[in-house]
Amino acid sequence: MKALVFEKKGQMSLREVPVPAPVKNQVLVRVAACGICGTDIHIFNGVYDARFPLIPGHECSGTVVALGPEAKALKIGDRIAVDPNVGCGYCEFCRKGRAHLCQNLEPFGVFRNGGFAEFAVIEETHAYGIPESMSFIEGAMVEPLACCLRGSQMGRFKEGDTLLIHGGGAIGNMNMQLARNQGATTIIVSEPLRERRELAKKMGADFVIDPSSEDVSTAVRKILSRGPDVIMECAGITKLVEKSIGLVKRGGTVVSFGCCPIGEYASISPEYLNSNEITLCGSYNNPYTHAPAINAIASGRIDVKSLVTGIHGLEDYPAAFGSFGTSAAMKIVFAFPAA
Image (cartoon, rainbow, N blue to C red; front, side, top):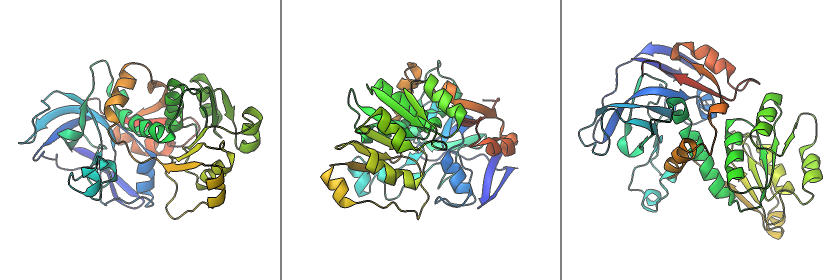
């Protein structure tokens, strides 16, 4: 089969590799679509822990074509979306229902081969059925939306809350849509790229800010004098986490959602955090949020189609990776016509 392989830091190639065989309760999936995530870029650049050589890709959908000997729930022909975060099932965190924090986590596309290939294997416990009405491109968006649902849980949104989102990419946009559905009243998106600001406005943002031309704190205070109830940092910029603590409303919540660089630190005043009763939290992976993510897309409550701006064949990987993060790109997806 054809697969895109990260040979080592900074080196990738498209080559023929053997089709993997499902073992135990695994299923073999003919990959239909797999999105490029910022994590894939971090892996390629060597700033995110992974195992080389690696077939990356964890935002994956496809069709079950073979079953391992212990697979019981799925059948050949099932259309599925992949939850990539496979826990061990027996460590302290797994036994407490917090498998996303598993001490022995084996993420698909990070520590084991993933979806930038014609075929992939995944435990059937981590393969979620998607309806016929959902395209495989939408199926590839289930995983990032599931992560955003976790972000909403950590943000503790309440009806009538106000929100600032740093970053108007696909993740920021989905978080914005979720907040709107949960009753947020004023949503502000800070994003330097004009095309993303325009899309955010079109899809539900009340206000957009260009941080390259105006001071975000000043602009936000003009709209919300006491600051927003919740701030979500979705751009992966460490300084924005630090600044958000001084901008969020007293009693508010700051969610560090974006993947900030390893080794960078924010300066925080514990006294300010305490006296203003601010909650600062992370949002990691997607624990038990795949099923609701599928429902949200299938019902039309969350629009992911508008976020996909580039669909490429695997052989077109230089253009796909080259367009990532550009002004015209939101979400780039590899698609496999044979699926």
